[in-house]
Length: 145
Image (tube, helix red, strand yellow):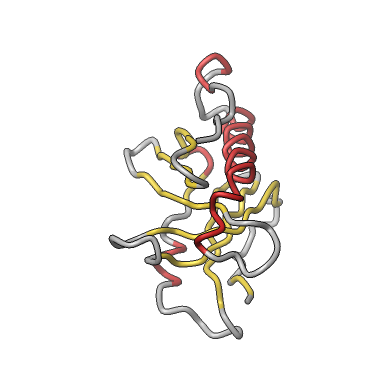
């Protein structure tokens, strides 16, 4: 399993990455594997590729990416899920998975600490970029559910 890594601008560097999936549909098994990649300029989603074969929903996964200046908030949700909101009212749900191993959907309860770290890192990047809420509005980094 690999990820279709996004291209970075020459003045952009990766700050943090987290394996996970983007949920869709009505069942817990409706999901598309992705790597959340936080850079100095953007929040990107790199789709998973199994045996290096292009995933038919790669465009949908990449479309969830946004400029860091457009990220309004990152909030913990149930299990290992977090919600990323844009200043335009769009939201992206992302579920963290364990950083090693196969990363099955049913392991998400074990990944809550990774969700919390992802929320903390996104909030930190928002503050550093000057586009997010002030320190008093940020909260505690995400309490476990």
